[in-house]
Image 1 (tube, rainbow, N blue to C red):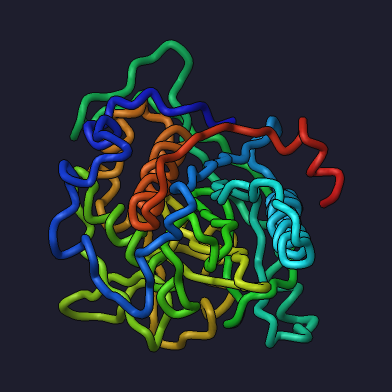
Image 2: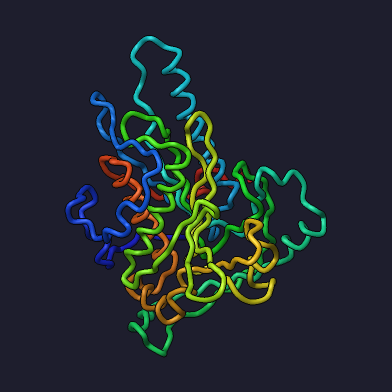
Length: 352
């Protein structure tokens, strides 16, 4: 189960509410402006965003458990909007905008256009998938940066991936171990943070992710395109590589779904170990999938983990916190409050 990060990384020490001391470069500060309104109501104070990092005592929470939590939070916002619009009396305070972050068990999600899936395709997706998780041996210090030695061992687990429908656009994609999924649940027209159109909100999610990757101790340069949503690596040669997928669903301007950033998800190898080899990601022929680990190289990624005790779970948790803080800054929010919840203790896994 992921533990709260110990904050050895210098980026974690920047003042949450300060814009003047931001470390992002000008090239990543405001990459696009497609209809966002930075103004808030004069009578509304800036919102504080709640960051919920969802874990599981069993290792990883299920995608269904995260969806159940998202539905609960979204329904609360929608119910508040309904009661506020139908009542002339002073309404109760709106639920806090929330971001759920998690790393799920292996799951393939289908876009809303995919009403059916060929039985052979479904069987292929649900073939056993071997997930190797590096773990630091008890009592052993992590290796120094760029060391050729290792104090880590690998835990191998065999999963049968789930296949589930999703309200987003697009086609099949994958979520699973090694990935950081970030789902904001907020009202795009709320008065206490910057408002957004559908287009500018999608760009907000992309820009937030790009800024995070550009801020790493070893920065990763990325690009975005209106033709192919998500965050991409544009190489000098070879096909473009997607490092983060984007999927959004709105109901009365209240958001669901969000971004899936590949941290150390396997992106090469046979189908038994590489979940992407079983399908064409998002239906985009001629494009590739990549990860932070693939872009940094194995040694560069190990150097990044070194600052977090060699623990990939703690590293992903830290990146989640930085992503949420970046989103809060871009929305003009007052700040972020964070908490870690166990899906098993909440009873969410019983809904899977």
